[in-house]
Amino acid sequence: MLPLEPLDGVSALARLLRSAPATEVGAELDHLEERLNLAARGAQAGAPDTPPLGGPLLAAALGFGRGALALREGALDAAVLHLESAAAAFDREGQAEARDLARCEAVLARLRRDARSTCAPAIAELDAIASAGDPGRRVAVVADHYRGTAERLLGDAAAAQRALLSALRRSEPFLDERAQILNSLGTLYVALGAHGAAEALLEHAAELHRRRGDAVGEAIACGQLGAAALGLGALERARAPLQRQEWLCARLGDAFGRARALTFLSELALELGRADDALMLARSARDVAERAAPPLRTWVAYAARAIGRARRDLGDPGAAAVLDEAGAIFRELGHPLGAALSAWDRASIEALSSGEPAAPVDWFSAAWALGSLGLPSRVAQLLRERMEIEESMVSLGGGDGSTPRGEARERALAAAAQTVLHVAVQREVELVYDRPDELAAIAARRTGAHRNLGRLAALTLAPPGLVVAAVAASRLGTRGFALPPERTMAACVADLPGLAVWIWPATTGPTDVGRDLGELGAALGEPLCAALTLAPAGRVLCPPFAGDAGAELEAVEVGALMALSAALAPGELHLDPRLGWSGEACASVEALGFTIRPVRG
Image 1 (cartoon, rainbow, N blue to C red):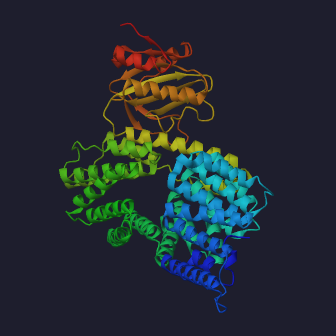
Image 2 (image 1 turned 90 degrees about the horizontal axis):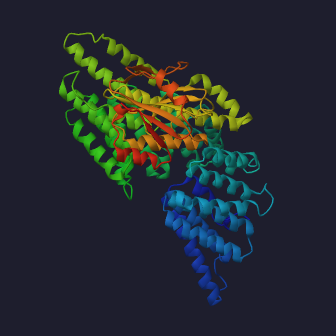
């Protein structure tokens, strides 16, 4: 028995949960509860004309419906309460399938509410549900689906993919579940940057939801489909699914989805140079986000940012105040991407206000933050905006901006813009069905490469000065191990069999350098050795293009450093006195497990 099955012939609640506004679903639930209470009172009084509605199974189904609506609306405490109560009620009536499906939904509500802190017990509970009978049961498919959600929250993309694909393979008899699984798998691939695979899966998901009249599921699929198209650089193609999401969410009364869609559409209009359209869409997004209960402050901030940028492009002097307001909300929320975007906006406003192309504006901080978030496309947009502002000022002064440094900036921008791999789209679609593990490995490698590219692009804006490390270890040069992980502060400029070269801004502290090298050693699974120096005038002029051997550097010499590192013993660090590390700093690095061998001057 499915959890809402006791209401068949009594109510269209199952259909309403898929396609009706929350107010309408809530009204139906209240109506059912009133009838249930009336039936209970009539039965107690022995009234012969009591309406034919009552019994513990109907009460359990009603509780499940309230939990499903709360889960849909994001009222997660209420969702957990109602769904756990429904599971207990179904258990008392001996309805194992309905009980376990309610348990799965309760696990999902806890995952959304508590995120990582509840993942391990959630996986254990879902595994127990899935293994309690035939793996082809609906409940086993749902349990594997939600296990994939838990693994994604833990950051294990490969495990998430395995669980979701396992659920997908067994979902053919359950098209409603299949559509939801396709949504989750497509969302995972959007996050991994495998946008071609994501687009193929989400198109299928949207069509299945549409056939079933599931407006909620279709709105989610369309929103992610728009994100996948944007990831592929297909700006015009992104418009239709985002408009569809906005329309569906308006019908459903889904403020979150509608604010998201309107904000994406406003940013799309800005990218296409339609500032007037962007301003109208962003104002609508902000209005929707502010009227939600409680207000959706993240989307208020994103909408305010779009308003500010549109007003700036339209020449409105009040744009700076709106952008400052958006930045203040992002900082209050502790939102990393929002804070990085706000730093970009501040640099843009300062550059425009200065009226001088050579004004000392801090573009680097925003670019570095965006690159470290694995968003080289955003770094490319920032570089483009900076160049456009500076070129407009040069042209006002009668110049043409043609300088060797300007040419290097052009190359840096072109390299940073290598983030939409159209040629890989068809191959991704093939791999997602034929060899999904290879797709996951490729996507993870590309994510690391994108992060490194974003950091190298950001370093083209940094002041002169680099800490340089030539690292030796037997496993370097294979499987992308030399790419710095997300938690490090380094960028990789060379990766050869047994050798790699990492760089940091000269302001990076010794402990951070040591910690980063420790992270690399942990990833390699072996102790490494490294020779470190300071290149006081060192700079990154241009990140590598596809097929390039490395970044274009200035005033950096690594040949002798690489030879020196190859002669060190595992675990040794060779320090150039120019680094200027104090005894205390060296001790902090040695505490990480390294042995320091300073060069004697």
